[in-house]
Amino acid sequence: MDASLHAPRAGVVGGGMMGLAVARELTGRGWQVQLFDGAADLGGLTASVDYGPFTWDRFYHCVLQTDTALLDLLDVIGLGAALRWERTTSGFYHQGRTYSLGSVAEFLRFAPLRFHDRLRLGAFIAACGRVFDGDALEQVSCRDVLRRWCGERVWNVVWRPLLRAKLGPAADSISARFIWDTINRLNSARSGIRKQESIGYVAGGYGRVLDALGDHLRRRGVGLHTNAHVHAVRGEARGGATLVTEDGPVDFDHVFVTANNHAAARMLEAEGEFAARLGGVEFMGVVVGGAVLRRALSPHYILNVSDPSIELTGLIGTSNLVRDGSFAPYHLYYLPRYLVQADPDWQRDEAAWRAFFMDQLQKLAPDLDPADVVSLQVSSARHVQPVLDCGYRERMPGLATPRPNVWLVNTSQCFQGPVNVDLVLRHARNALDELAPRLSLPAPALTT
Ligand SMILES: Cc1cc2nc3c(=O)[nH]c(=O)nc-3n(C[C@H](O)[C@H](O)[C@H](O)COP(=O)(O)OP(=O)(O)OC[C@H]3O[C@@H](n4cnc5c(N)ncnc54)[C@H](O)[C@@H]3O)c2cc1C
Image 1 (tube, protein in one colour):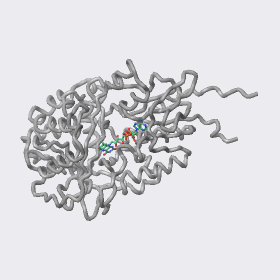
Image 2 (image 1 turned 90 degrees about the vertical axis):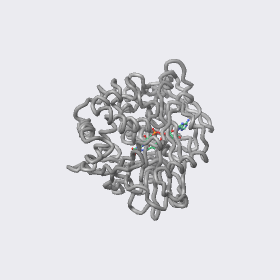
Image 3 (image 1 turned 180 degrees about the vertical axis):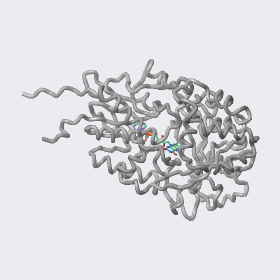
Image 4 (image 1 turned 45 degrees about the vertical axis):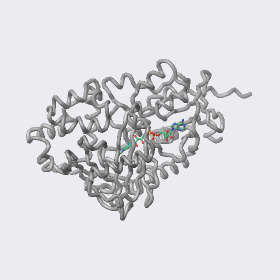
């Protein structure tokens, strides 16, 4: 008899990396899975865009040596050999000048800080993972920890502008765990006595990862439905759950919603305490200019920007990481501008954003000829990073929803610092481990 006839049936809402990871975890546990995404392509934030001369990720993505869940996944889907590791450098843009921070020696010469401030900052960054306990830092303000350990000048020149560029008005309320996780993640990209940075990417970009992951899931029997916006999800007290798309209702034993809180609240018709939990999470969004240029702008993978005249978090030099000719003869840079939900800049149209990014490019590189800009692609996402303020973990939404047999597995539950694909994969696995004893199935119908 076909075992799949008796396999429990799961519906997954959302085909970003979280939904794809949940689908993979479920098939590994013997479930029959159908996944639904409202967009034309799978991938969510990792999807690709056409830049003109080439197609690449719409948002920049790199891989770190400590991304073990991601590295395992790449092996399983046959892309282990497509990983490339490159030595990269970081820089710092301050008051119209760029400082290279590619080595300890360069860091010690970092002129915007006095020598003893540089030592203090360096000691803090080096010791961060060992001195502090991340869980304890969830209750402490980031601003207080950084001012106490690094001093007022380091706070004003380095940390405050960087945090404000990434988090806007939320910078002052963020918990110290956020910076602890960020520093530990960045430290994990550096090794050896000279602390040389080494960062990875998949040849072909995330588009290739999504193709391979999609094939892997289809081989495991997962139905992948795109252009399939889910309007509503209902749970049945007597067993089962139903999701509703344009094509009508589809019944499952359980439904897993991986879309963001805003979308989840609508499809679950959230009210009361559940609605307050979902709505209580402030999410940072981002608008990114992806610029294809005829000339190089900076030799760094990340140029951190701490300069009041520039309204970007940084300049991401993807062509300084991807050096395999994918962009030749051009260069690809990303210009991220993070925004809180209430920021009036969300009202800007695409033409206004293009003008903004051109202006920012010319401020960063006054000698840039507009004719050197081959294409400028504007991509935006409203729900990227929960604002992890003090006590966030106690307030964040749990996996259970008020709808029977409907579960929430999304990035608002990723309280461990900046959300990234590795964290998403680990969250999907941990969530299903935790839910396993609660995934009751309807009793089989009695046959005579
Ligand atoms: C600028 C930027 C840089 C980043 N850099 C890195 C990096 O260097 N390294 C790294 O590892 N990570 C990075 N990330 C983070 C990473 O991309 C995300 O953490 C991850 O992709 C989140 O996946 P997700 O599935 O949770 O969310 P999403 O990708 O947002 O997926 C959610 C999906 O749900 C779908 N959906 C929503 N509502 C509905 C509905 N009603 N019906 C059906 N479908 C619906 C959407 O269409 C979407 O596809 C970066 C992200 C950004 C924005």
